[in-house]
Image 1 (tube, rainbow, N blue to C red):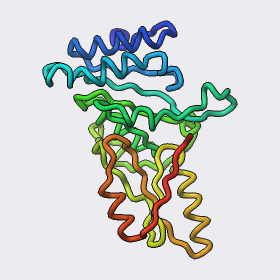
Image 2: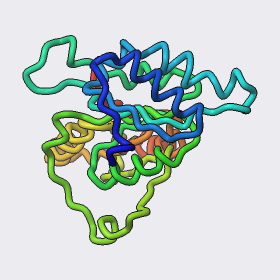
Image 3: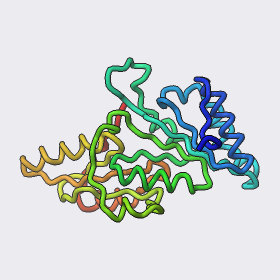
Amino acid sequence: WRNRVVDTPITEHGFAGLAVGAAFAGLKPIDEFMTFNFSMQAIDQIVNSAAKTNYMSGGQLGCPIVFRGPNGAAARVAAQHSQCFAAWYSHIPGLKVIAPYFASDCRGLLKAAIRDPNPVIFLENEIAYGHEHEVSDSELSNKDYLLEIGKAAVIREGKDVTITAFSLKLMDALNAADLLSSKGIEAEVIDLRTLRPLDTQTVINSIQKTNRLVSVEEG
């Protein structure tokens, strides 16, 4: 690992540029931000270099890189460290954006992101780091456990209203579904998991059943 892990100064624009250059040279870098709030310092490298190069080169040069780190609000931090950048990055052509919640999804989608030939934004959540989830033996034992990027999951079935969420807000959506159930309203909860490309078909299929949609996300 000593030749594979590079400890850098806190200069996001600089080490993001190094990682993008490494991707251009044929490596598969994973660029980690202490928090995605600091990715704003590297936005030029992410948007103008990583995301656009495949288009600008006519498909001759790609940027197979993963940008990962905690996104959204955390505990006892200021407003500068509490933003959710999911919507920002989801509107940038050339990027794939992943925001899972469950531990097995994080594993399967991160491994899929590393194998993807495109630049991928992998949004984690600092509060969710402390949450425990059940993981099956097959998921643990399979070193090649992968999940498809761009595929949502129906976590709870219902007939009255569809609730979509991702990352930490999935927990709030499930809690809301429990509360609604106690009042006789059965909500269907969809974990989007990937924001770009968005699995619109799974959402549409649910809405055709419930006729109502509530979207839950961080600000």
